[in-house]
Image 1 (spheres, one colour):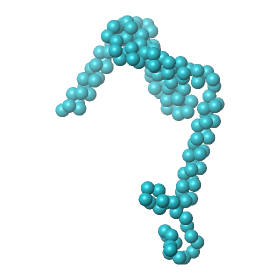
Image 2 (tube, one colour):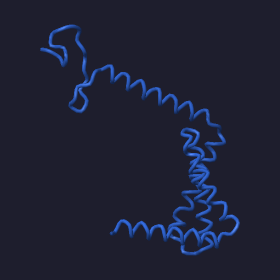
Image 3 (cartoon, helix red, strand yellow):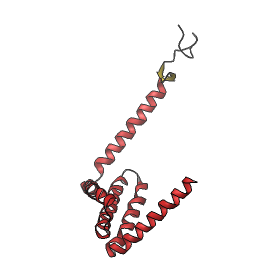
Amino acid sequence: MAMYGNNGNGSRQSYVIIGGYPVKSIYVIIFGLLVFGLVVYFLLRFFNIGLTMHFSAFAGVLLLIANLRELMGMGYTQRGSTALLNTLVGAGLICAWLAQFFVFFWLPALLAVGVATPLVLNRSGVYAAYLTTAQQAVERVRRTLVR
């Protein structure tokens, strides 16, 4: 009985069947080592991040949970603007925490906090402008896709 690629000549190569395809066991071992290395890397990064960053991520999750439902259902300008402000700050905190693992998350973190900053100064006016801009963007996308 001949194994794949052996034909009775030379040394035998062991194969692993994955999804019905023969794969050299060395490739499975290399893949396993890479996955193991990534897991170790992410665990080390997770434990090296200070307690302050974990606390801020937890605070961000709490802000999102507490305000996202209110934001989706609110029609009142003042309460909706507060919910939007809290949601943006929460998203910024979570993205800053994620940036400790992947540096490109700093961009949405800064963007969320940058968009939230004008809401602190003039909640109702800025909220109305944000709402109008979002409605116009949704209308443009709808027109583009419905054609």
